[in-house]
Image (tube, rainbow, N blue to C red; front, side, top):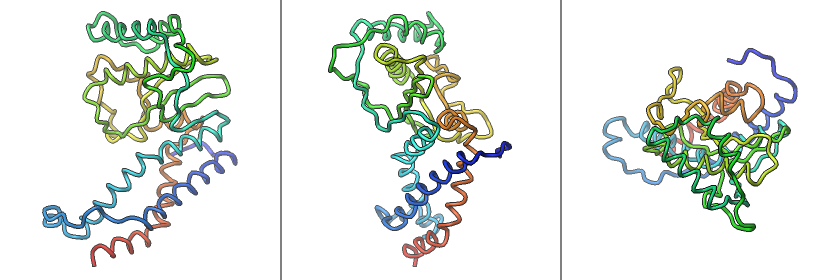
Length: 266
């Protein structure tokens, strides 16, 4: 757990996170209705109560993935003095020449002609990136979270589930490189980072291995997961504190949750 004492400002930030989470969960409990009560095989194995709980947990997980993580990132980032936008539509694009060069880089990576070293690739991209026509938005324009910090470091963040439906990383790598090019070509930025982020590591305490064998992924620089993600967004070690917030909210709604489950099992 966190060893450093939180500042008053950090405590206030976490109170805002707790307030929002409590609001989301109370709304979920109020409005929740399972898509179906008929799951005969699951019910036969685990019983009606556990079947109802399973259905509710699945619904909660969907709610988290749809908006909660983005809202948390916005709350934490803005509190740290950063410019943050959720579901951000990039109002810029890159030239056809830049696009061709980025696709060629990916082809070279796949052919093992060059290593997928994101820091080195970003240097190349920074040097050849050119803006596209004015008024033309990019095909990969939608970013889950856009952040610009006080030092003009820009982050294009794609938030996904800890077990993403990505068979190979190549398509994601192409998008991340294109976002990097857009950032350098169109923004007043000291640095540009385009990253895939996940709220937690399902393999914890073991390392996350999902893309370990994919030559198109520089995991250290392309992916931020659990502490690396939340601490980057907040500007201070916050992951363990977020877990505590969930524990507090969980205890607060436990009675209402039990009552809700009883309505589906009695």
